[in-house]
View (cartoon, one colour):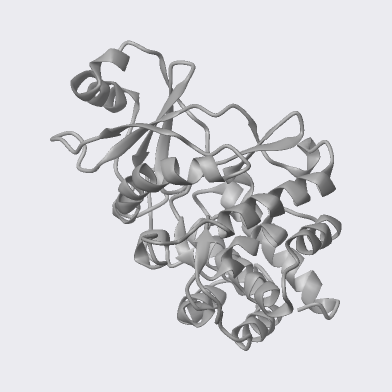
Length: 308
């Protein structure tokens, strides 16, 4: 794995700070240039986020692979929002590349809320139901013209087998950190699950705690649609293992009425994401590492109970 330095998560990551954001605003959106700008603490890996005044935020790709997310969100989030039961980000303006910053960037409306944790939920089972209902409402939206899963959304929603080589390479670097033998067995079980034969559906692609906001202990918003695409619905089941407990996981599954094969692929998706993220972010993103450990542990516990 290529080394990273200077506190950055990726090789080739740009330097982004408050002065850069203010300079971009001054040139492209001078009506907002005098507003306070504050970095937003986030475990997100693809974008830098800055709060702009009380009601907006600026979101800028850190790395080249995230650049395509900007146009996709600008186009599709306004179309999806009226059809969903939960609030999602609303793009307000599209920033253009310039001599100080090479890519498109976005201004969004600010969404209040706390990052979801099992501890700050008023009723974890109700949260699981609300989350399942969000996924179901997203799946019901017409996919005509939607972006088919591929490189633009980190290939979320494609057949699991396409991730096999990367998962095995990650496992080779995790000896002594997790039970790699058991993880490999669980991964190979997931690989034997048949591929999705139904019509592709809308997927968020990255449902995890950092992208779920709560208000008064209830699900209030879903954010970060960079992995939005049209593909296998199993990918949106990853939240069952990267956030939910065993008990709430069962409520989530029952609400979605998910078939066994899709559930098994969802578990494979969650495992693959955890196994790939753990070595990649091991020294640069403690939240991602902690979440990867939790996800892997939950799936291996399922496997030991004969549920995998």
